[in-house]
Length: 509
Length: 99
Figure 1: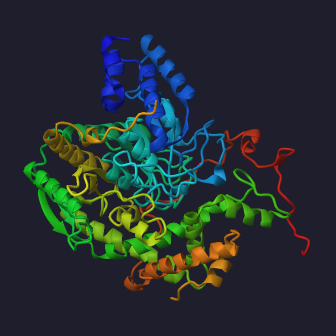
Figure 2 (figure 1 turned 90 degrees about the vertical axis):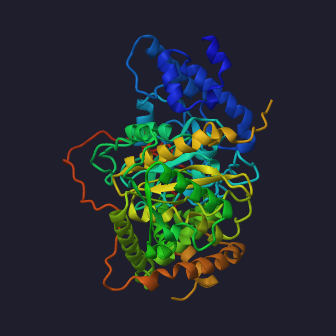
Figure 3 (figure 1 turned 180 degrees about the vertical axis):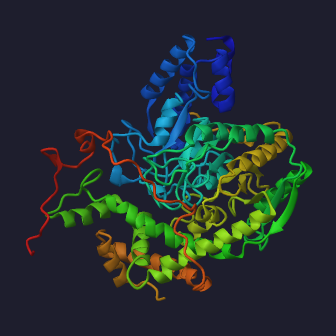
């Protein structure tokens, strides 16, 4: 290829830039894919963002895209731009485990709808990214295949459950990845790795072929290093699918144009609400997290937004409601891992004994905890007190959001109370682990869309801080407009994206 | 609401079809009791007058025409099975000796 492409480290480019360069003939998809495969080979040992690499499959897609482009065939915008897919999505012919030993070696016989859309967009699939087992966790330490490490500090967690998808972006192993967000599994990893992640409106992206955790909360979403890249992937993933009964029958929100509009940094007339209960105003949030949050609010004001405080008093009960609803639905969803149709079988004399032994061996501790908790919450005599009450709290949380959105266009908060903690620090204290998601969970209970984007590094430890934006259901585009404005304002000060400041990883020879 | 003890966890593990050793029960029971105590606060706030929400976005049931559509081929559906025979999933015996 041209001289430029051999001198450019394409792994540092945005997906939008890669797409433009492909269209302009500056680079080939094979070169892009090979650059990312080389990067993965160089750094993924210690990062461990990927559970499976499909080098040959990615290169094959790339070659076909390059041939079509050379032949003048009209191609989708992201054709030839590589991507990583969270291992929660089934991929025909590629191993899919959802981070669980119970699915080790399973090769799905079909594609998830989102996998199909990625293939139709002609995006080479680099591989499957690591995650907490069945997406239960906030650190990827609950992966059955070992934790992912945060590229900003390899001794720290990359968030979870989508720590692999976030770390792959932060380590420049992929320009785009797919995540799933049940209580913050896209936004919290984005926050602690200085990347961008969006949980769309519930039903905005088809979940057909996504291995279910909690069906009334789960939503798939896009992850990138910039707001525009994330928007480009959102438009690939989104849209109605008759294979998912909860899929919204409405057009994909115009998130790319919203991101472009936001980059003009004019927020005149936009009303931003700070949720008192999520702002860390009562203390409890790390000082640097609060500081960067306040600075970002000042930037929104400088761009013309009006910032007001709102209160959502029932959010105090959101975490408890979530940890009743999620385990209840998960205990039901995971009943299908019964040693009969797929996955592990630990053979015993009868089917029942085989199931007992298989599930004992195949599931990790966090999965067992949540299944037991869900079985308890749904059992006779306790159902009303736990599951019934949690569903009522859900109504109260929705009412709080409705009241808040009557006063403002978007709500904002820090994404997480702290910067990433050390691997191992909270592994034996489930409740402390659950508190990571205190600011992200309310959106899942209400089905509304949310974004996390970088707001800086905490002065005390030099680690990433995330800024969360929430919008009313169906109004995903607002996240991108406000997010792109804040991103542009911050990038002007930093001289580029925060991801560029990540420390250099040691490269394997 | 009362907290969970070790025998509750053993019974629930049986219902959930997960074998648990004494060591498992020792490790998980204490953690589960702490979690159950923490989530019990859901019962404190919502009164009789608050309706339950099961689903975040209101939706009606989805229907389609009752016609045969392409689906997984039999061999594809069986491709991940731990054991299969004659185009079916094969399992160990269903009834134990004591039955």
